[in-house]
Length: 193
Image (cartoon, rainbow, N blue to C red; front, side, top):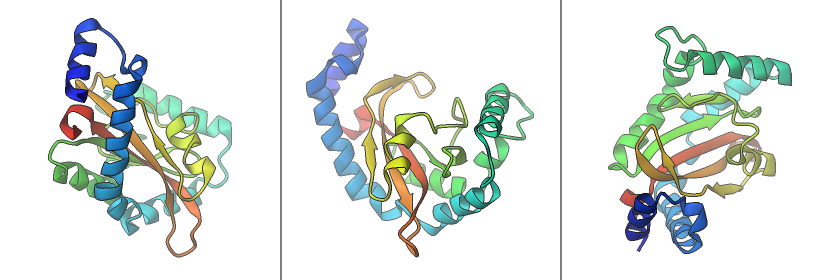
């Protein structure tokens, strides 16, 4: 059903936001995929420790600092020299996420983690901006505390040329039970269904 709906939406130039039945079906599939495939590794020590380190290093940041870092990130997207972006793409947590993308058989299109400010910590590929703190993937997860999950709408992603939805969850330190950051995983709608 969803594959047919996706094809019809693409042909007609429609957004799936206007197709609630398909969105509901995909939300159920996303939720099931999270439970069966992502939940087991979402709070992996590689992710939690990388976020905890960033939280400690960025503890005194102001909104002006965050905005400046986000502006630098945006200016470096596509540039050969990217000193703000490179550490997010080239760390052990990013390698861990890339392995999960590879293991998914094409279902996961991207994955990234955010710290307590909503700034990227580790990513499988360059995101359009560094600060996710004003987006639902962060405001409906980390800001809501441990156990929070947000399922994004199916949208056409220009960079991957696929219809995808995002699963976002609060990441929790297993030792303390405290929220430390968030994880977002992009899922290829057609591959999942």
